[in-house]
Amino acid sequence: MTTEPKSFRILLVPEHVEDSGGASMEDSAVRSAVVEATGETGASGYPRYAGNGMVADIDPSTRTVEAVLVDGSELDYGLTARVTAS
Image (cartoon, rainbow, N blue to C red):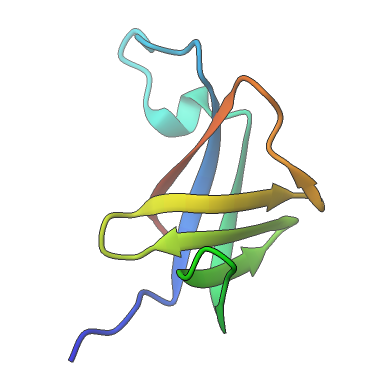
């Protein structure tokens, strides 16, 4: 039996950050949030996580963000959502 993680940290990182010059992903993020499992499944079919103004459907096995809302809106162009362990 596999269990889904209870929480993740989502980092919003500018797409143009290709080489951070040794900086960590956390240092390159313009915003981050710890999101907790809601127990619901999102429209994408993946578990839904929410917290700190973000709601995301995340594939827990690959840590891929399948859908994300930031403060109720779609992600701004030029930003990507990255997932790390919380």
